Every structure is written in C-alpha cells, then in structure tokens.
Image 1 (cartoon, rainbow, N blue to C red):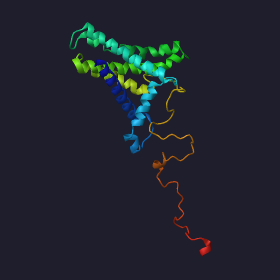
Image 2 (spheres, rainbow, N blue to C red):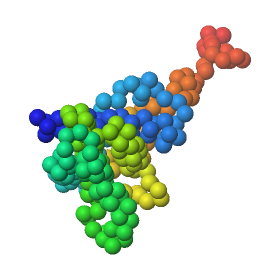
Image 3 (cartoon, helix red, strand yellow):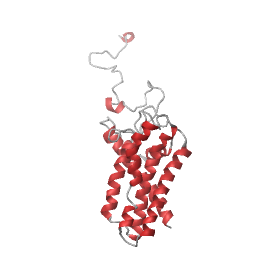
Image 4 (cartoon, rainbow, N blue to C red):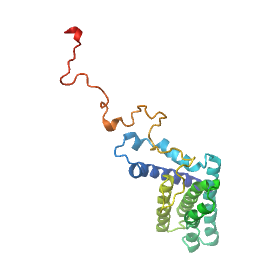
Length: 237
C-alpha cells in the first residue's frame, strides 16, 4: 500500500512539475508576447513530451528511465530508515532522513564531476538522476505526511520550495546558479530551439499560420481594388 502511494505521488509530482515547467517556459523564458488560446489550454501533449524528455538520456529511454526510477526508489528506501529508527509522529529521525541531502550533494558536486569526467557519456544521466532524487523525495514525504503525519507541514513545504524551482530551470534547459546540466549541442534535447506547443515544420519557408496572427490574417493579400485602381479590364472599356 505504501509503495503504491509512493508511485502514485511520484507520477503526480512529475506531471505537476511538467505543467509548471511548460507555463514558465512560455511566459518567462520565451520571447513571445502574444499567445494563442491553444498554447494556454491544450497542453496535454506538451506535458507528456516534457516528461519524456526527462526520461530520455542520450537518446536511450531505458538508461534515462532507469536513472530516474533508481534515484526515486533510493530516496524512498532511505526515508524508511527514519520510520525504523524513530517513533510514530514527527521526530528528529524522520526529518533527517527526509532531508534532500543526495539531491543537494549531486547538484553542488556536478560542476566538479563535469570537469573531472568531461566527455564521459554517463554525465548525461545527471538530469534524470537529479529529477528522480527530487521527485522521489517529495513523493516519499507526501506518503509519510499523509499516512502517519511524520513530518511537519512547514518542513515539507520547504522541501517543495527547494527542489521544484531547481527542476523548473533544469527541465527548461536553463542555467542554474551559473552552471548548466546540458550542453547546447546535446543530442537528446527533444525539441531544439522550438517552443512547446508550436507546430513543427521542416521547411522554413512553409506558411504554417504560426506567425500570421501577429501580422494580421490579411496582411499578405494583394489589394486588387484599392483606391485609385480600376477594377475593369481594358477589353471592356
């Protein structure tokens, strides 16, 4: 039962984080000023693409998913030690074993790992691993708080405020405190240089209607009957 709730909360937090990432992307990180209604309402496909992008690693979904689930299961098992060593209800062991120590350790040590193992393909697992550690910590905390009230609410709220903003920058491929977890020419970026929700087109000259609304729907039509023009052909004169 407890493990089922953990997986349920893990899925929930993954989807909620993807929704936050999407809206932060289009409202703050993109340079657009006008938005279509579909961009703000029809986001299901984009949310699933964001989640899939996190689970991908170097084009290999198996490695990325394994790193994500491995990190999440590790922090869940780690949190169980607080219940074993402590008593029911909020206690020091519960709060210690729910602190995001592994998430913070990987986050702050990544620049040094990146310099030490530059060029190694295993570095691309940092994104799904960090995401699994964060969301696994939040899911485990939600289970323990919901079932036994083992955590104080303000402590759990602090866990959310520490980890979710980092994931928002990480999933949007934006630098965090001056460091980047993904290279600019990474081969596993799901949509390069494209806004989520925009229709894709391989032909840059094709008229997809994406930018037409900014210029007006009739901006490209020729005015055959403007002022000063004669609508009759010379044959009828």
